[in-house]
Image (tube, rainbow, N blue to C red; front, side, top):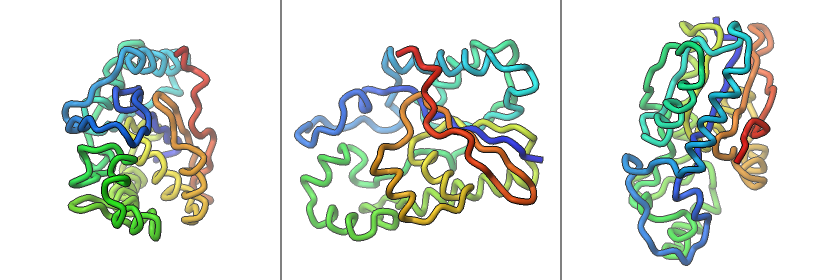
Length: 220
């Protein structure tokens, strides 16, 4: 029975390092081509060392990973630090939010070039879908389906390696946070690269947040 769930955001990528400058016109690469920076690789190694320092009985029994290379590479580097590798699965439902036709632009650039879409997003930040894309509620639905399966058939300790949108919507799904609180979390800043967020589950009362966006293990 699932009792402990952790989520790691992948290490830094060139897109993350570039920041949110709306003047940047360089198209983003497809998600299948976004890899870690050198700093991102160091962060992934730091994640592995964090887990390697735990007692054997506190290591994950199962790792579920986004299909995107930046997440897969994060776990590849992390698991190299462990004495033994837990069961590993790719789960396509853990990919980052699909921004549709805007996926080749930074979010800031897309808002600058498409003010009508920016206005629609401002009216409903969690429900807004960019053209041919998905909303944060869509992310919550697929993440919620993963959690439901884990509750029914999962092992005791599970680690998810994915993206900031996945971590954010895990908080809503697991903690039943209202939309206003989710938006406030996003406003303060999403989970950072290489961060760890963790929850403990009581079968009677549900999930309790233990740590959000913990980066104390990172050396860079």
